[in-house]
Image 1: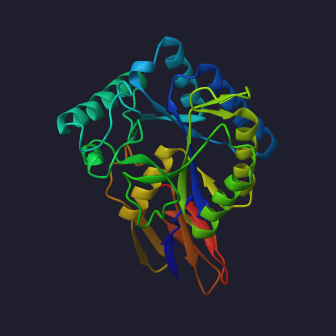
Image 2 (image 1 turned 180 degrees about the vertical axis):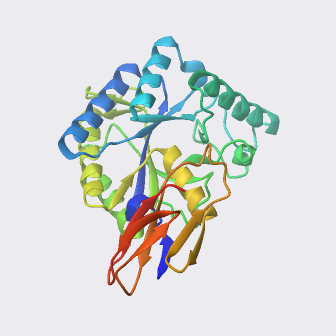
Length: 302
């Protein structure tokens, strides 16, 4: 009997995250959730995205909205700096970078009761050296370089992206990008700001109809078991847990554990188990029936 931890939850072939920057687009956010609920009703696929929030852009109305959407499971929260006026590169003093990382994390924790584990550096000019200031404060950072990343080898502070743009009308390049992730077993984050029904681009907008079409395509791949649509926080938790996890096998008993802080790292993990005979086994004390001649896919709490 052999057991390993799948690269993605439920043994999906690839992973994908929708992140909306700034946290200040009230009406647009409601449109995204309308699309998520529409897809959930039709297919059963629930899309959970991440709001990367600039603390200085928030107000009481926005905070009430985000608290509701977090509670409903359609969004979680990452930091996007205090005021959007910082670049994480060598030109920005080290203490300025560290102070922003710490302060934005603390302010968002005060608001939502949960400290964000992910940062989304604003302004696009960040560098790996500049992002070292984040390493002891957050567990991951999104970059602005287009492309997928292999969770086995990727720099967690330099995760690749695809950028949602208003001028994108033909879905073919988007579909080809996502299909490439599935083929290569990679993970990527989509950079979004807000959705517009207007023909002209107004400050980083993406077309509403294009975004809806993209979400439906992502959901179709999720239904086929090819894609895990995860929030940034959930994906990062899974990647860290998978890397830290230890599997021990004794007879028909398997124990899976990790040494990370379970108050933060609370994602279930997916096991892939191969056996040469049908039998019942125990995984962390819970019985499971497994079959010979196939990959047995079992998701467990750790």
